[in-house]
Image (cartoon, rainbow, N blue to C red; front, side, top):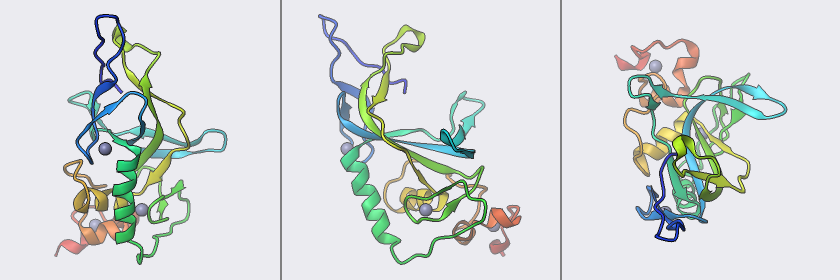
Length: 193
Ligand SMILES: [Zn+2]
Ligand SMILES: [Zn+2]
Ligand SMILES: [Zn+2]
């Protein structure tokens, strides 16, 4: 995380950071329990380290294609519990060769799919200083959770809008539910006419 922190005249960091929780719109303070939500692409599974992944990058801007968000942990729980309630009657979409299971709907997530990575921890000043500037990091990190593209789009469209144009391949809602790209639905989506 590159958000920086101001210091007072004695060199002590102000605990209020520039990071804003997208659920309550309040700034997050150092020492608070947070989750960081990033959009990633799973590459595989390593028995020693777990899911390996890469980022979606905006080559022109030299930055993340989908901005990562930091939530108060309780605020994220609020969003996610609401969402889970809305899908409680849905069946998971199972697939052979899945990399990891979605924490929301328990569907399988495949290599290369747009996926939410949820990392819980405590917001701290990082010991690393990229470019010599103080930076933020997480300590006391606990196991990350993964959220499939259908849940990520579901949260983004009906609970909390975070990203524009979030999709695997420009698919429609039916294609998204079915994961139509897995069966060679090259968009131009088969549902579109
Ligand atoms: Zn919040
Ligand atoms: Zn899901
Ligand atoms: Zn399609």
